[in-house]
View 1 (spheres, rainbow, N blue to C red):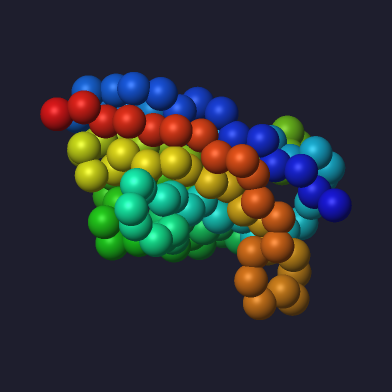
View 2 (cartoon, rainbow, N blue to C red):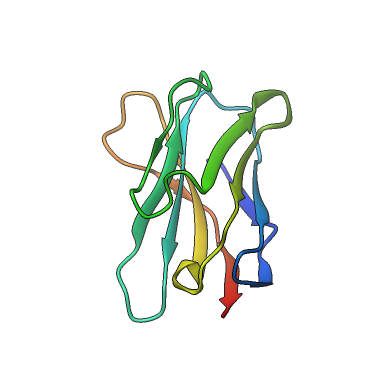
Length: 117
């Protein structure tokens, strides 16, 4: 089992920045991702990064504004969010996908991000 704990959420004005962190309970070679769920909406993919820290992928809605990164020595994945918009308001979840798995298996409890106009 891998436990994931997110932090760094909060209330910010539009145009502001936040950095989310996700700490894993054990060192993993898993691919990691960030997802979000806004009130009344389905959970959606935000960004992902392979265990090697190589090429990352982003949802079109955050491309150019968000950056995912990881520090394997600290078992931590980050999501730097710049130029935040009210539509970015959601609960953000960190997830881990073991090598060879077809889906994300481990999920954190999430951290709330609220962007005011």
